[in-house]
Amino acid sequence: MITNPPPWPNGARCAVAITFDMDADSLIHLDHKADGINRISGLSMLRYGPEISIPRILDTYRRLGIKQTFFIPAWCIENYPRAIDAILEAGHEIGHHGYIHENPRAAGRDEEEYWLYRGIDVIKKATGKKPRGWRAPLYNFSYFSADLLIKAGFRYDASLMGDDVPYILQTNEGEIVELPSHWGMDDWPQYVHAMDLDYLMPISSASRGMDVFREEFEAMWEHRGLWIAVWHPFATGRLARWRQAERLFQHMLEKGGVWFARLEDIAAHIQSCRSSGEYTARVDTLPYYDKPELPTKSPEI
Ligand SMILES: [Zn+2]
Image 1 (tube, rainbow, N blue to C red):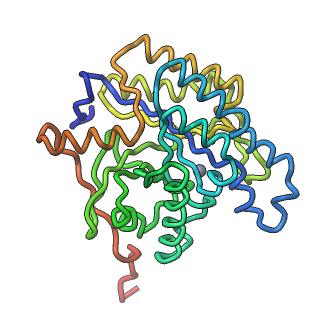
Image 2 (tube, protein in one colour):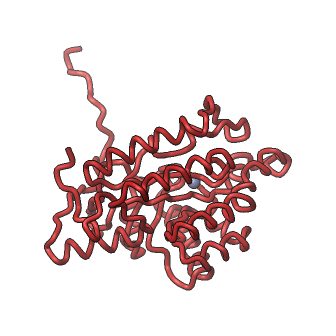
């Protein structure tokens, strides 16, 4: 059902990346500029991510012996040094996720570029190297994003939803690996209900939410695809949900043939398979359109 599954390392059936977007309370400061500091309950809900969930998640990863990727707005890197140090000390990857979760689609090219480079500087300072990957805040990948990422030397993007396996984004500036996921792999629709975020969904039970992700895994395992969870520490890092997540990881380990990897490793693997001629990735050329595609009325109407 997947026409060109990549050759995963050691004959693995699929690649699994549990990516966490550690947005913390950047969301409230951004959405409620006038009174964000007065929303203590909402702030506490989001601060649960770096304060309580991150140590819990890292402990699980340590026990499983896996390295994973965290996308973190630069403002959060500056404000939550303890969580950042723990993530880095354990050998996980930190990817770029905006400065304060701003919306690149609302920015225009110059402003998008400004925040991109400001975030790169913060990540360089914290980790000692440039970020390899980017995920657009709230999937807000703009008309200009691919060009800006390629120009800035990123190796991969993880914001788009155009395939079941890694593919290549090509623009006039060059190319970059895309590591796709989709809303079905995001934990917000399952677990987030928050007035302060203007996001109200009926909350799934921990097991029902995890069933959605498990079914995605079974399909990717069977057809040799790429499973990327887009989770958030304040949501999936809550106790009952993380307990179910651990059960899912255990199931993956027992099933076998799963390559748990950081996104930077998956992007590097795809590029090495392309260089050796072992794999031909699908190429998607951006932008899709140069002007709005609006049909005009026929003159006689
Ligand atoms: Zn985010």
